[in-house]
Image 1: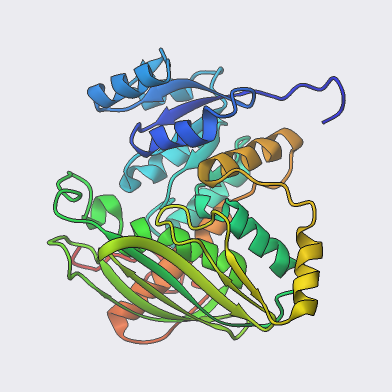
Image 2: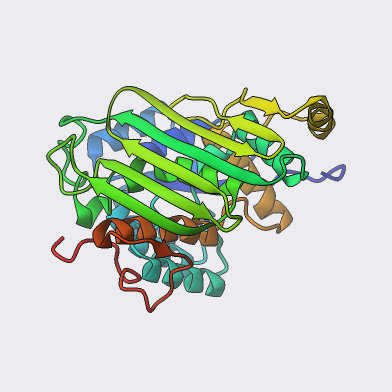
Length: 363
């Protein structure tokens, strides 16, 4: 930053104080020179009071529309149940606000295309949350791959082995198609899938099976899928909510390097990753590529720091609405394959029967 130039401090309204609290803890509070949590909004009065007291945010509201009308709010951070995202995003963009939104962004490819069009007309910019990209392990792997050191991609695995029981689903919106928009694929595995595509490239074809085996819910809690990447590489994805220990794992095999993520369930992007070179020459190239590497913020801290930098410099956002579309296109393909028992080809456009909704017809 040029001498004498000050950092712009963006004023944020956090909508939904559940996961929104994590955004504050990790993303906003560690950088008071970049962000001020100016207002909180939640329908749960006790939670609103608790989070407001914890972070000394005096401005507390149950009126989302009133916050949109305020000129002193720069960013609307949406952390509500998924079924509410579309309307809130459209309203915030129409009000000219920058928007941060938790996953899943919306409930169909048709809706995400509507959001992309609305963002193009707005003064505001939209950043979906995909925090697994942030952490020293993931960022170092990305640098090695982008430098051309890894070589041809071969095969990979993406695993989401978590535990969720009846207590988790004792909630008015979880486990239901209309409000959660999906199950383990949508709410839990979506982040490791984004990280897999971030590092391994776009998906070209999918074959998948889904099942509800762990909990008495509407949506799936077990998924097994085979992806063919545009590069010709293969990736196997497996997810369940019935694991007795929780891990998230990404293992990617390239011509010259094998990468394996950390196994922490909610932050596999953290370092150190296992990085196995084919030989000493490859190791030397990796050492050169990582020379001078500066640690990055993990999870929400890393993504919010990159968001601030992009907004302040007028640069492309670190995660975009088109990234969210690619994520939801994969979701659509997996649900379509599981329903039809066939391979599904990507990209998916308006002519596809699941474009308007991936939900079962009887949902």
